[in-house]
Length: 415
Ligand code: GDP
Ligand code: IMO
Ligand code: MG
Figure 1 (cartoon, rainbow, N blue to C red):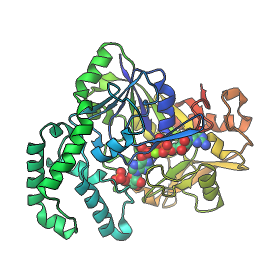
Figure 2 (cartoon, helix red, strand yellow):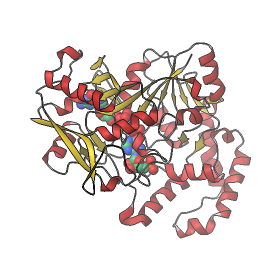
Figure 3 (spheres, rainbow, N blue to C red):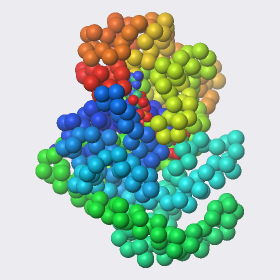
Figure 4 (cartoon, rainbow, N blue to C red):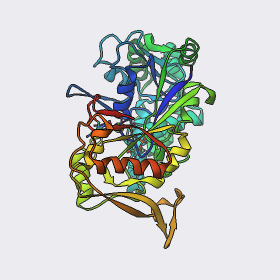
């Protein structure tokens, strides 16, 4: 059996949580492969809202198991807090022993560096993501599996602090004592030990047993460390390829790939965003779409659908299909716009570009529609909304497999 994959196509917050939860009803396992608690995946069932940061969005399907892969950076503190909202996760949640930990100093370093960047700040979520991945790559990180031996782990952490004493002092970061560290790590061990496992083998076994596995990406393609709008990106491989290293799968293990995109665009934090609308339309999108971050509560920047970026993302991820989310947010607009090309130094460009900050959007305008909210069949959508979806399909050369018309799990059109 091959594992299917869900990936964000834009700058995150596309609605991955809703789709993973919707699909999870038909899967035996859901696995996260990268990112950390910078992610905020919202699920709405019967009007009740649940925000997930580290626990995979399959958790509401009582029969599915949930896996946090080795590519995820795990804040034990954040995870323990998140686990409290669910009873009996034993046997339903598995955390890779190889996943790196986000500890307090990573969070302090993230915030201190953002302050130092001043006007060039990335606008991170302040969750220690960059510093934790830096530690991993620098080979000074610590993995969840090391919680099994607190004495050894705390000594190793103290060695790290000793080596970095001057740097941490400059950043005004306090170094804890070994006793404090041990106390904190003991709490993590007590809470997490039953869940720590060899998730690489677990995923292989599931696939060998013909079980259905869904891989859940966090963030989005344009935040990818290599292919996104660097340096205004996150620190992981957010594209589908990240699922292989982030779980221990081979490219041959990946089945259907579905890209999740909003019917418009949003971005939190800084960095280029060609279709950002600074006027009334942007404001209306923010209000109608409730575009405030799930993780930090920050206002999301809003603008029109960028077909150039979407085409680029579909190719990078190898998308078989796209799910177009939040179509209802465009309800009531007299005209809707799609960016079909960029203009750079007076020239029309149809490919995604290195210097995205120089790109001006070339728009195609289409007539709007009154109401798509809550619609569950494509034929029941207003004609202009159908045309809009079909146009996105044409421009991205990717089949639209799903359209979402409200936060509710059930308000999802399958095509
Ligand atoms: P994720 O990070 O990709 O999982 O997305 P978020 O959960 O951060 O943000 C998406 C937001 O849009 C959440 O509040 C969802 O409940 C909401 N949402 C998802 N799909 C739809 C939709 O089709 N219509 C509307 N109005 N809201 C949606
Ligand atoms: P989900 O999974 C939207 C953004 C931050 C910042 C940049 C780097 O909910 O789609 P980081 O803390 O990762 O170092 O911040 O990435 N960012 C997200 N934006 N959705 C997310 O996750 C994000 N995770 C990080 O706002 O611009
Ligand atoms: Mg989110």
